[in-house]
Image 1 (cartoon, rainbow, N blue to C red):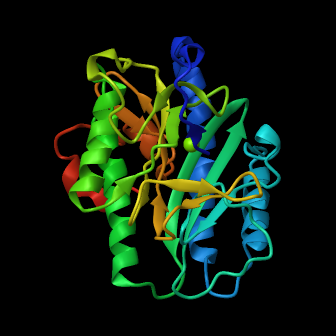
Image 2: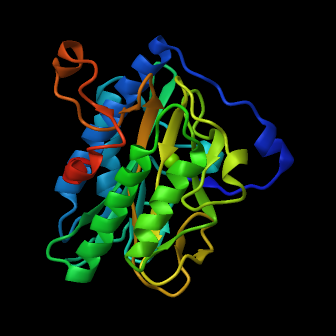
Amino acid sequence: MTGRKSRSRHARERRISLKSAEEIARMRRAGQIVALVLERLTEAAVPGVATAELDRIAEATIRSFGATPSFHGLYGYPANICTSINDEVVHGIPGDRVLAAGDIVSFDVGATAEGMIGDGATTAAVGEVTEEARRLMRITRESLAKGIGQARPGNRVADISAAIQHHAEEHGYHVVRKLVGHGVGHAMHEPPQVPNFVDGRVDESPELVEGMTLAIEPMVGQGTWRVVQDDDGWTYRTKDGSLAAHFEHTIAINGEGCEILTRRQAPGRRQADATAVKVRAEGWGGDLEDVR
Ligand code: MG
């Protein structure tokens, strides 16, 4: 789930918590549940399915691992996941609405396992979608990968923001300003904020250090960065009614880069090679399809 952009001094001065290896292990578990749920939702996003049914699938999957849906009840949120269709950017509430061929739908999922949270999102195509919709989804997914490519010790949060913004805008798209990525772990929204645009001075942006855990989540609009909120108090949509896409991973900064906690990891692969999912700035560009 995205955070709201805040300029308050209080928000800036809250301390960033660094997680231990044991805490990150629990976040990895939560993250793997999120990854599986997103995979199942993408498969289930076919014409004719109601978003409430997708919410049910997500909840059942999360609970089958003894975990809980992190969004339910958060700030009073009434469902387990967010389902945001077409011009809806984030925080769409599942309900009676039925998916139609040609829709794109963004799924945002949080799972809490043993007290630690994983947060992830993906945008899926329902049946055949337009070439332009596909391009928006691809560029947004690539923007996430570019941001993750900057997530390493010594860089700053603003390096992540700049990479995301540059890639989206270079392709003629717009990054949402009102909503941002965030620290995550014990709580859904921890400091620091992770904007998808450069906000203020780069050298005043928090430095990335080992043990920091972040939800990086570009929200990209086809025609505008401006969003409006529905009367339901949750759903954000693009002001001009153009399409929006949203991709998100929870990552943990490690010694040399970061680990993507919400990307599916093959069982045993982690034990065999703990560095398998580390991301380096160089070389990442060729592996974009791997990021969902
Ligand atoms: Mg989030």
